[in-house]
Image 1: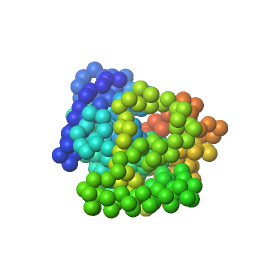
Image 2: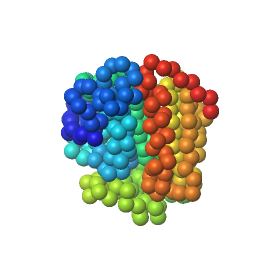
Image 3: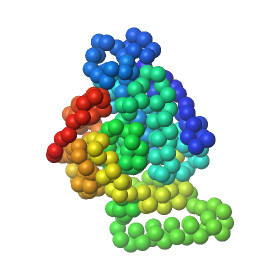
Image 4: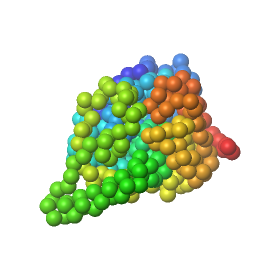
Length: 319
């Protein structure tokens, strides 16, 4: 796998990314040792775009192991930091899936300009809360996306935030949002909060996990409370049916205390064909990344192979 530091503009802000390419003999020609990589006859690699998950950064080792598997299977991968995160420009402390979706679409456009990538064969990969939800929305409105893999998505941002709180905590949270809205209007600035303990809720597993330890020191400790409003207005379940006849693979974990699997079930039920759902059992939200990597990653690649790599073949699958 070869890594290239790249940048592109998203709504005027410079966004930093990493383009990961398969090992090959020349700049634009896929390695003929992997004959399946170029079934579309373009002489270029199919591409996968990933925007990081909740509070994720592009160079996380958590993502790199997936990307290595994808490039070994003959895919180019573009991962980037959203505006306001990492080394990307943009307003800091603002987490709005609507803006992140724009970044993903601009990343697709950038990937289309690369001579190594077949612009007819671009798919999305996402994992973790907004990371899993954003690709659903983007694929629904952008038909350049030919295939989606969504890991740990929420169906409704409002219900995702509510599921973490008891009733009185939820009512108090709504009160804070209302007060913050008034403060922004009267004073010009709102409240900043901890994204892990005030937007999200610090579950025992969240406190103990080390999956983002390598980038943790660069993750923002304070974000604007108004980010919650954007999350609450974001409902991928309202859009998921528009993806068909393009393919979508959902991945969830049973008894997930971070992103409850019932959210994924709802998305799966509302999605059209072709679709597939993988449910990981006897593990937990963060542990599943390690427990199921060797089992699930080949299924992800098989999905991309069926619905993205072979652009001249149309496959319909009934679950």
